[in-house]
Image 1: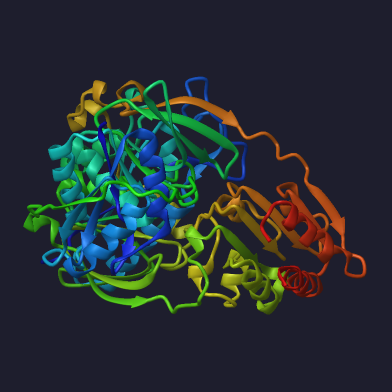
Image 2 (image 1 turned 135 degrees about the vertical axis):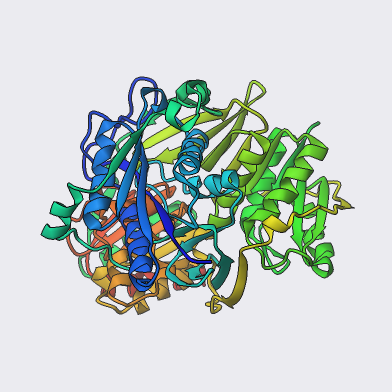
Length: 266
Length: 320
């Protein structure tokens, strides 16, 4: 099988260094805050570009796909600047508040609309919701296998091999295209867009799709369609300042052990 | 009482601690049914282990045909068991694999999924989960409103409860599709045994950061005195002092032990994201301005290379 199309999933997320908050309906405030391409998705873009570069004799198109509000265009724009060939932005007011299930539906339908590629690449988690389940749900919907959390990625022909660190073992996983791949921040530094890349990105195609375009009914997405419901969101009470002692002549160690003993850890 | 399916997390038949925590949670909801997918020769021992922690039923699924294949076959097994038993809930460990199985299962069963629960309670007949989000700055209570609740639970969300269940063993032959057998483990290098608990499931974690200067002797000494796992900050991992498997933080392991001891770690946001839900937090750092001190229950401003060995000696002395 030759590799002709790679779709990279990218997400626009609230900036983790900014003040992230929730809206009155308990959804993440994605409008009133500074946002950017999820840092962890940059690694996915990078791996897609590296695969394309390593397989220079094949005509490979890398498409960055995002779902989100108007601001989310910044995420695919960044991917284009890094070197993706084109971008697709699914945007619809009805999508706001969607959970992972609905997001995976929108992604699957958008991918079917633009043509199921041999390879779908995602990051290990978004830096906001952090669910890490969208790639698995998407793979299930597309009927594809998934190889996830890759620290090292190699492809040859229709074979994909990854290396990853599991909880109890380091594993080599093999799969055959088509499949869904997710990569970690160990897979390799993401490149910075060059000036040339930034200029070139302005001329690259960026297609905007609505739910109607991809054949998803508005009732299937959004907060009301969610299969889970948030009952309450509570800001963590500022941790009451604990006791801080200065170590003087070994007093710190004794105080530390006294504390651990008082909490029955010893 | 409705069954609650609990996927048994095990390494070659050896049941891991998070499974017992899931069984304790399952008891709050209904009658725990453990699902063991593994080698037929290991099933009896695994069944005894989960029975001792309250499993009323143990479904044994021989994995001879699917061993080495990734999550898709396990999702099919759980789907078929769910269709057979109409469980009140399905509980899985919130490990990377557990969450992927859960994600596929949610789509298969058209059921709501909650991941990374740090608590699960039953209120007025409803299952309510608690999650900690945005680096632990918010607590979210949620419930599943469609289908069978599928909940991936973080380690240390509940204390294991000993107490034998009925433990009736039932063989279950699942029909696995060829499509599920496509991605496969080609080689597996078990982590070198350190003699210490596994990082994500340890009740106590002792971590070192930049302040160790690359010498983890003091950190490891304290860890061993406390029976703890050893962790490291991203700075320590990036410096090559510890492999990535030790990393605690957003892009490493996310831990929520009973006790977290941060040594020579400043407390950058991405580290906090990996440990902020720890029940008790202690830090040792030379810099009294280090942000980690904003989180701690107890902190020592001092040099970890003198404080930790002295503390370790004191602990050994008190233990006698």
